[in-house]
Amino acid sequence: MSTQSTTKPNIGFDSLRETTKEKTIESKQLRDQKRQNEYRKNSRSQNKVTQDVAHKLGLERVSAIIGDEGGIDPEDKENKEVLKQFENDDDNLRMKTRHSNRSTDKTYDNKVEKKIDNGETLTKKEEAKERHIVQNIQAHQDKLTPEIYNKFEDHFKKEKTQSGHTTWDARKDTKKMTEARHGGKKKVK
Image (cartoon, rainbow, N blue to C red; front, side):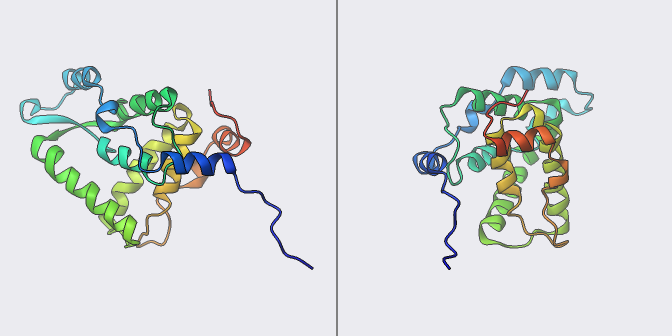
């Protein structure tokens, strides 16, 4: 008896993944300077003069995650707008020293991404920081499109941790998002 698989490949998604591979939403398209200025103005930080408004999940990192392996059309206005809103939400912003924002954080992002690509294990400190980022993504899943949410899930599930558990907690996925992602619906409202 043949044990041939009866599942059909998702030709539409496979085609989209191939045509969008290495294409991405540019980080500069995700920046909302007006929103960042508003956040700075309302911040209670004592050292605003020496600080930048920083993104907890950096713009360059998001751009790389979205472009990795394709699958999201960078020209899709809904995905671009939703991602821009998420990136500039108060929960994803913080005040950081200029050096940390412009150098240290970028070095951290590159180091973690390299570890993910090479299948290396995160340190406990990196794991804690990545869990915090994932918690923020999952807390805002109702504001993200299923395509973007899938991309984040796929990416963060690749992280190897010392605890042996993924930084992505599937128990936090809402029923609504799960149905939209697996039921073929595009919008979640």
